[in-house]
Image 1: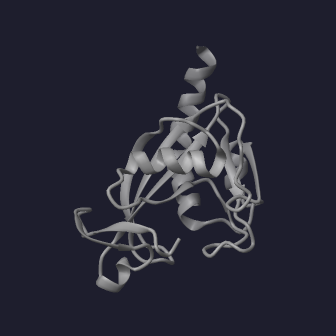
Image 2 (image 1 turned 90 degrees about the vertical axis):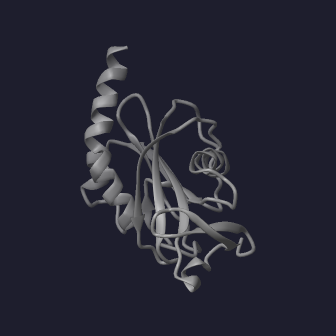
Length: 172
């Protein structure tokens, strides 16, 4: 995937160049990442473990399903594509927030989406070694270790929203 082209963006998330994934940092620029937290109607979130051979955070748990935004692709298009590629789900997530982050691959703009669904998963075992829907509190209690730092921070931020959505879904 090193030959995959992505847009390089400035500190304000404006595209300024295009090049191979993983090389934006060489030019002092950012790359874009679209990630989705997946929930179900019971307020649980999808948590997964990355395979031991993953180039970043091998063997770590995470709640962010996603990856790099390809050149010319929107954050939403990337989020939809990544859900289909990694867990085999067709969904239209909604953007929750966008922020600058640091990552092992260099600085990036991370856009976090939220998607709810009750369909079965078709997990890509090259990307995901194990997964389950669990209550956010269980995911955050420290028993799933190690955990991708950005995923943990996002889940801490989104847990109140997930609880509210679950209450609404149960009433419907």
